Amino acid sequence: NPLPNYVVAEHFLKNNLEAKGVRFRKNEIIYTGVDTDFFTRNRVGGAKDKFTFLQIAILAERKGQAVTLEAFKRFLSKESDPSKYQLIIAGGMEGNYGKEVRQMPEQMGISANVIFHDWIIREQAREL
Image (cartoon, rainbow, N blue to C red):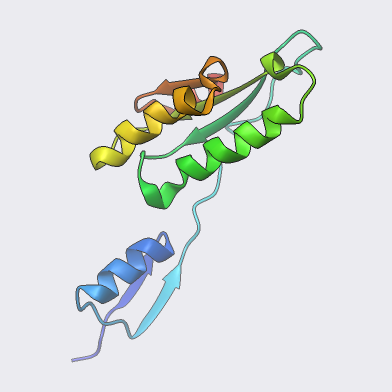
């Protein structure tokens, strides 16, 4: 009986499958990118607009929201007017990590610049 071919979307999934005993004859990781046609920018912000950083992913340690928040804090510390920037993090929560991440901006002193959303649909992501 030959082993099946599997296609997985990320290293995390591949590693979990292998840890559970799934054996691969051949495996391939398919990186799912952003549909740049759907997310084409239709306006260019002026000097008065806020610049938005957006991360959409389940609030899970492997998705790195804590790292994103730390990087955003460092970025803001180097800006003369941090009020011009915002970070939006959207996604459902996985365990306690999501609750912890949602508390981090307050603890870091950047809560005025960070917005959290639960899961959003594709059209909402485009609007953000």
